[in-house]
Image (cartoon, rainbow, N blue to C red; front, side, top):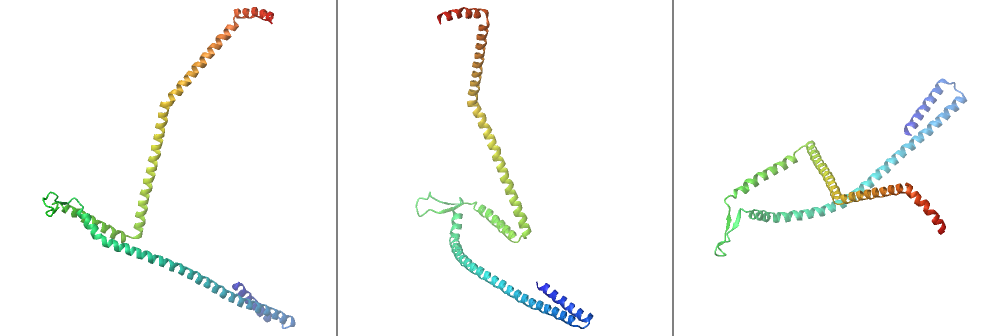
Length: 254
């Protein structure tokens, strides 16, 4: 809008200058120049209003930004109070850890098989703590492992981010392949167990079903053979004669 108003003002100024330069002085020319000058002044006032509106909009945007910032600062203040409480709890936990850490370490060392109490002493006051001669193995294993752990931590902290991302992606890929392998083995085992159940069910119940089907087929065959014999007997001449001889007797009886 501001650029359009400025372009209109420049165009009107050029039109007024061209009209006064190329036209003869007359009433029509002066009236046209006055009308164009009026339009130019109207665009100038519109341009001033647009500038004032722009400043007002910038003030409103700044006010909104300040209000949002104030709200965020309140939320951050509440979060900082919660974090302060959590930090106090963590400090207390760390203090307890430091208090009991020496005792825990000493108890862990003395609980190893390298130390033993001489319970075979005759008197209760004469019992002593015996130390194995191979106690140096404990330190020969612990010290190198501790040194390796510290070196790995130091190397991981000072490792560039690109290498960290690559290592994390590789570890995630290994974990994903392990999950897929376990799922595949689970599906194979489930299929194998299902097949074994089907075969076991056929061994227990399938044989009886097969025998029943065979018995049904045998009975159907016997019924069919009996039906054939009956039809053959009815078609013989003796059967026809007995049937014709018996029919008058039936009629007399009726």
